[in-house]
Length: 255
Picture 1 (tube, rainbow, N blue to C red):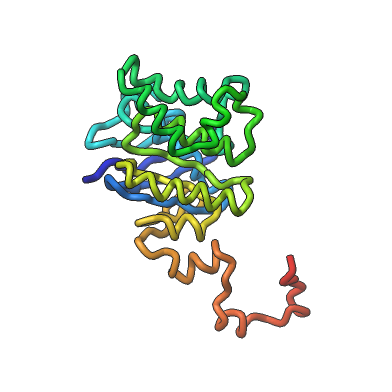
Picture 2 (picture 1 turned 135 degrees about the horizontal axis):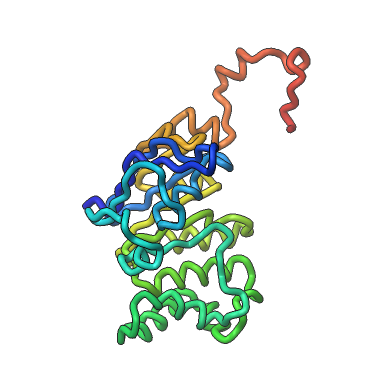
């Protein structure tokens, strides 16, 4: 089932085009990755989907419904959770208070207490720090907290923006294990990730965004030579053999 549809979306900041005729879709139960260089428009797209940025053109639909008339808090009520780049914890509030804010769109639902128990079982370290201020947590713990907070709204779709940014490799693996398990909980994921290899391995499908445009898409971009060269740092041996000598070009392979 088509859960999210982005169709011909354009966004500009003044005279600067951030997104240009962007179209993509996410089907229920998928993990879809969006990769691209810094400044390509990835975070702008996530904010546009969440109605934090209003598009100048195009349409966005969630579960077959246009969201053009909705505000950000109404998107959360529909079942979309957003985990922004930089984690976005409320640092002076406790772990418990942060988690309970995630359930705010659900009002006084009787199941919230059970969901809190379930999130704390999934992230035991949060249970150990339940009364601790969020700002005193490590980077990895804060990332677990914002994912747990997103789960508290019982989302159908989570928008994850750079969840591994600034984390140690061991913590990155833990975070990606958590993301991989979300679909088993019935949660669909749209993932923006600067670690292109990890993001592509995790995804059912992926899109490449460059200069505000979708330039590639598919289910096996990890093996696409253009992606491997541009985003994984791999050079085609044939291209390397035909390149001009280093001394002639002044290039430095160590740069």
